[in-house]
Length: 361
Image 1 (cartoon, rainbow, N blue to C red):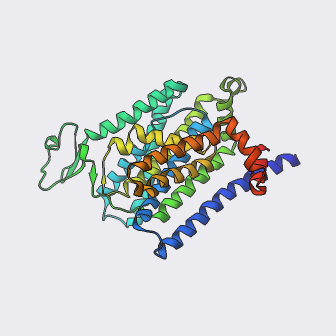
Image 2: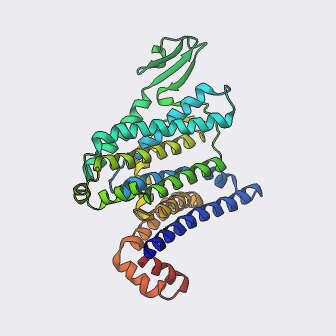
Image 3: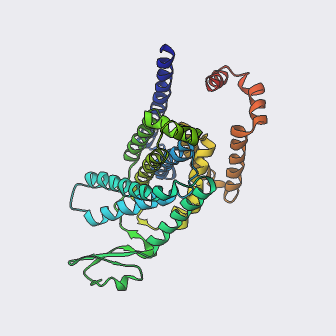
């Protein structure tokens, strides 16, 4: 019993280290920003860094904790982004800005969660490559549907079309087009701030870590480790897969809402919500250590900063970025490289040696 409590305490201490580390980084960055020590480029990256960290947490719940491969997570981010931006666009001026933004974030999460639940019911019966292909298809379908959707509003209410703005059946001189097909939503209030994005990041982190350490989290990980054995002891596999997948989609919707309110124009382009974006989120999870929430956050921040910091190298910056990815992958996953580091690096530096010993335990 004493050993059980000590393990729980160690887990709690590890979580609080993660919370404390993030809060410390937030304080330092805020001080630097107020003091004017961050240039405009770095200041503009603060909200995207939080957004990508939230997406890494979200995807790690599916890939690392549930053990399922999803490469369409940008689709949930897209749903949350457009749902929240639509709400803000039609309610701007009708309530305080902060209240409207909070509601917009919640709506983005709820709508993305609904899509995650509905898609998860049939999709989570698949495994491995088949699940990956279906989630990829979902992400592409969502993006293409939004690109052909036209929504307008006038005195008679809302009007919808999937052909052109001229077919909305409304007076375009007095009405307002909210979603304009491939041109997306223009004029969304830029409400996203580093402080709000950080708060959402912390809430997402707390929810995920508490889920992982809960009874439901242990059931989810048992499904990941051995679905047949989990089912044999009475664990409802579909139920726990849906729980993880839906919560992951909700968190991705939060990230999408923050992302939408950081842009003047929200467009469902492949660069923002396409296949490559989903792969980038997956890279964060893999390089940060599959199943490691803290590692996913660190990987998201580092791999987002590297291309921006190396902009002065023009085309060579992506070459350096690729080399960094390969090196990190070798360090994390190659037994030969890890063995060499253990013998020649970790064993020679006391601080690293202590960290390595904790990982081994």
